[in-house]
Structure formats: C-alpha cells, structure tokens
Image (cartoon, rainbow, N blue to C red; front, side, top):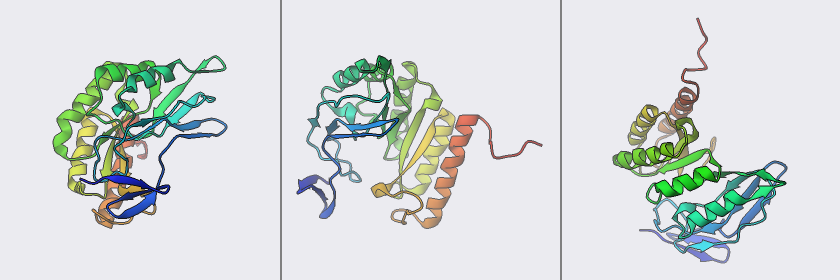
Length: 234
C-alpha cells in the first residue's frame, strides 16, 4: 500500500515528487467559485496522492451562486454531514447556492443520510467513483439506488472510471455496458491526471485509449438524448 508524505510544498509518493495541491483553496471568477475545505482520505488507493491525515479548513466566504468543491473525499470526513448542512445554509445576496463535487463520491462512505444532505443542500451533477474491478458492481448499483431514492435522477449521475491504469480496458468496457443499463453517464478519468490529447499509454495501448474515449462519448450522448444525435434522420 502506497502512502504520501509532504515535503517542502511537494508530495512524495513511492519516491516520486509531485506538486502539492493540498491545503485550503479559494478561487473566484465572474460566475463561479472553486474551493477546497478539507484534505485526507483513509483509503490510500495506489493511484492517488491524497494523504491519510484528515484536515478540515474553515469554509471561505461564499460569494458566487455556483460553487465547485475540489476536495478529494469530502464525505469521508468525520463531520461531513455538518459541513454539507452548513454549505446548504449559505446565501449570496439572498439567493441560494448550488454546489458540485469535482471528485467522485466514495461509495464506501455514502449513506442514505449523507445522500439526503447532499440533495437538500443543492449538490448537483453527482459523480460516483468506480475505481477498481467489475466485481464492485453490486456496491456501485447500491450507491446509485441510494442517490435515486433521495431524489436525484439517473441523468444527473456520472460514474467515474479510472483508465490507462491496472484496471484492464476490457473490464472498463463491462462497466460501460452496465452504466448503459443503469442510464447513468460515465466519466473517463485518466491515470496520473493525464488529459486529452496528451494521454500516454501506460496500462493500456494507444488504440485502447482512443477507442474507450470514443465509446464513452457515444455512451453519454445516448444516456442524455435517448437516441444517437449524430445520425441524420431518414
């Protein structure tokens, strides 16, 4: 199991130094506000640089109606429900605020109570992390059902799957098939923070990378529109 240690503003993991993106964060543009109000995760997944230690920072002044939260695993924090409830109370010029968790929710800590808190505090565009094998399908399905029961609809849910890592390409294709059945979108998250068009083959081949990106794009079109919008009507 890998661990991460802080060293002079950097993170060292398995002998590799990477930039330290932790600590409180508060960035504002004309329409949105990006914040980080906690760090630390108990899981220590081998593809993630997040440290184990739980730290919660003060919620900054909320000045935009759209807030994107960058925390890696907010729901794992011991006072997660209190944080979510407090965020839901915040107003900007008397108007309610909508929130979005940028990272995928950890199904291991999602409960009906936390899901209800997310819903009542106006957390939108719910993302759910499916990082490991296809055999987690029962856990992921249960997490989706929890979200649906508190009022989210399937089109509002996206399942994150890690790509180009140890999880095989063929296994991610199986995940894609199930997500079609569940009518939820898929987010292809590329190992080590790589983004298109600069994805280098690591666990997968270049052909598999290109093919999976195309399949995810088409999958999401079908979920959103219920039809292939790129085909011309005859």
